[in-house]
Image (cartoon, rainbow, N blue to C red; front, side, top):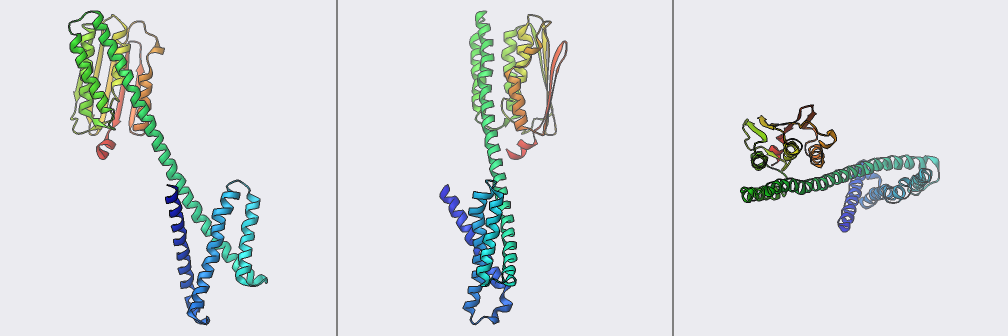
Length: 334
């Protein structure tokens, strides 16, 4: 990679030298007749380019990295002006002010132009590197958050199976198989950036069927779907934490009769997802939100930074979640 970068730098600077030489020759074409031979004219144009690019190269590869970037501004200024003055004296072949000043201001102008181009290019490179770093950091963080969902979901599901096994329920083997299907979907979807919204909704339905059997008649679950899911896509395992939270902190935490109402509505490419669950008589507010909701909040901010609205209300008798996500980005980039 270092060799490629060095090769690119060399080619870029050789190209710049050839371009400057061609421009100098073209700009001096009207005085070509003043030279004895065409050869001397071309040498004159190339020497101009050599002096100009020489100052620019010394400035870019020596003065800027070793003095300007290290905040040795005074020494940098002295060296830059001194190098331009030396080049003007050598090119002018004279110590007279009129001869030197002409070349001095000319080289000062070209050096300033070269510096502007240098800093513009370096700024573009830094911006590109920062974007790549942010993208990499985002991918790393999303991978970490997605991996966190696996043990969290498995832990909650195994707790449900364990509760039924203690009751010696004859449905336990079937529920274990149902859980294995849920885990298979989760493992497969975790390898993808997006899944069909239809598949994600079916996953939630199957999870609720499992929980409904465990909770028996203590909880009434309503799941309504409105609108056409079409081919909309969504980040996998993004909605399930809200459902898990409703089960864990609602029906699962009390022997009282409870309710969970979930609705999915599609309007154009916007998903409206609502979860409302009844609250037990005695519940600590500090226990309402665990790792699952913090995880999904962070994923929403990373995946849908300007295209989602999340509203959570913790009221006296009910706990509600209203989430709206514009899925257009996944529809375009699937």
